[in-house]
Image 1 (cartoon, helix red, strand yellow):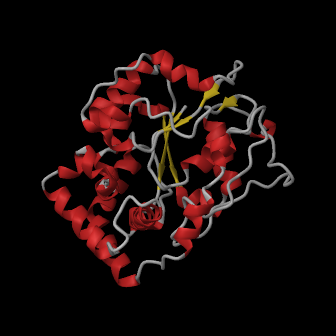
Image 2: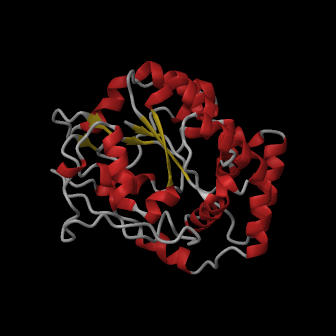
Length: 291
């Protein structure tokens, strides 16, 4: 099973919760990034054995899970190669309000030193718009400004639906935030796995944990990650303390800036709603309906 994005939507948390099921195996690393070169127009040169070696703990589970947040906006070269390399793979696409997601991405990159500390959010947005205007955000050197363009989900979702059809499940971060237990059970049921056989979090029997409010600037860093009582817990589930401390010093985005970003995505979100309904989804989050 592949969770190919989007970034800053809680994919690691979802993978951790799915990994409590005895028929689900997680990799030894947080991100394998095997197919990432395709995102930048380069071929994948490593043999598929390099992909398989990250599942050293696999002992016959029905599903192996990979989270690849860089994969979502890779276009046809990405979806075609994945379909060829992983025949029969199930794809869970995790989508989040792109306006909140862009802010989270900006905060995360500041905390990790991937953007100049003096760069304001408004300047970051302007830079994203300028790069998108000539499609220069596709170049690897501009990858830290690509989150904005990848938030136009309707530009990339059709490639996944065409390549994998009914083996694609679209999940919304907001639904997992509101009812995490129900959301994870729905994914397991879709995979034809019995949710009742999942292990509860250590010390919190029967509780699945949850997401902080979607407005929070630290969704992907400053959150209680769902514990993973598997054979060998994945070491990548712990957040970096230094990154969390840095995020706490950054204020939330202003309502004015949020409204600006929402307006930039509005038309694409509206079109996305039509595509999702055509795929059979009727219950859509507010950010899609408001588009």
